[in-house]
Amino acid sequence: MKIKRALISVSDKTGVIEFAKKLHAAGVDIISTGGTMKTLKEAGIPVTYVSEVTGFPEIMDGRVKTLNPYIHGGILAIRDNAEHVEAMKKHNITGIDMVVVNLYPFRQTIAKPGVELAEAIENIDIGGPAMIRAAAKNFKYVTVVVNPARYDEIAAELTSDAGITDGLRMSLAKEAFGHTAEYDACINQYLAKELGEGNFPNTVHMTLEKVQDLRYGENPHQNAAFYREAHSPIGVANAKQLHGKELSFNNIVDIESAYNIVAEFKDPAVAIIKHTNPCGAGIGATISEAYTKAYEADPLSAFGGIVALNRTVDKATAQQISEIFIEVVIAPAFDEESLEILTAKKNIRLLTLPLPELGGSRMDMKKVAGGMLLQDADTLEAKREEMQVVSKRQPTEEEWRQAMFAWKIVKHVKSNAIVVAGNDQTYGVGAGQMNRVGSAAIALEQAGEKAKGAVLASDAFLPFRDSVDTAAKAGITLVIQTGGSIRDQESIDAANEHGITMIFTGRRHFKH
Image (cartoon, rainbow, N blue to C red):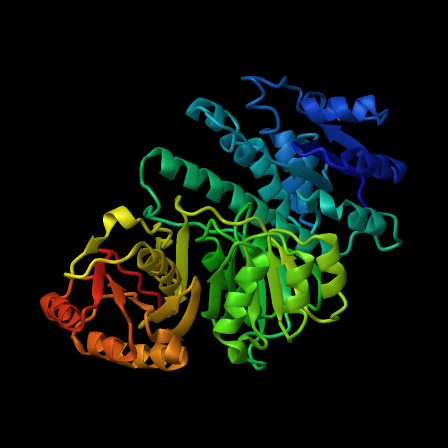
């Protein structure tokens, strides 16, 4: 279709002058409103003020300007419907073939510190969504444009012999409805918050933007894509990839798990992940020392793993990482020497991402067939002063340090979870077993002789004394667990019999 007349009214003026110049050069008459008209006129582009079309001034501080039959009739008319054409002639309505509109910056307004409700409400666009939806509904005849990133694509078709194609108009209409849906969802979320509905309002509207298509899902026979929450500044969806082949579905899941672990620590920390569980984790005086501890915890499993660090990757650490096959390295930054070393490996993915903040209000979502589970993310920070020593034997300061380390790690291991740790590193990890004794046996077997004098952490209470007996036999000197079982006293008695320290945290960290 050829474009003869276009209406331009945009809040985001990125690229609009260049686009309008191309429209004008193609012989398109341009209608515009207040701020946009001023911008175009100052750029020397001929433009007709919308009030000249409607015969009515903008009123009520601009709240009413395009809500008029001369505008909406021109947009909504079905051009090959005789009755519509006759109505246009009768009422002197001229067709509008293109609508270029994006909306008042509501999201940016509510993001400002201390914004008042009245200011937020005033930045709810009315005329804009009405024009967008009208043009999108009538996409057979009208081209609707909400995204400045598509100006060049549209301009290229504009000057072609065929004009704007049916396929492009439908694609733009789909994008337009997504634009207004996201806008309304943002308003809905804001008002729910203002009404005190918290993280769990009666309805939840999510807008997701595609980051990329993935080669496949968890397995090659599953198709997959990666999406981010619209305008969300946090999380792996905002990581910047510096090097390597594209990420896979499983890479992304593991990256999330690894980065959440190292964010727990103020000291330099490294976690190496396989299938969402840490095969090794460690802290040290330097990031290189932390990597050494994480790798030596389980060198066999580290092969092909995901490495997360909470410090800038330096030369020494990069050299260590480069010695084995690693799928992904994610850190806040890489220095120049580390990049030179690691980019020598063609396929290794290198990503940067600021560390997430502990605490705060974040949501965790799990999809089930026909529905969605939402919960507060498990961002609870471990605090020693909230824990209770329930055994006769008291922990040494070093044992307290290792207990806190192990407790932070076990939080990120799939339940049933057991972590054996000492010397600021994991010695053994038992994950995802159907009973807690099974997880303990795996963790202790992996720890081997290192279990002597080490600590053992359990993500939930020990329902029987058997885990304590198993730990004592391996040489564990401290058990940290949630407490809360009706058989707590049996576990305490077992700890006292074996001369083991037992700490109750009062907090559970199931992870499914």
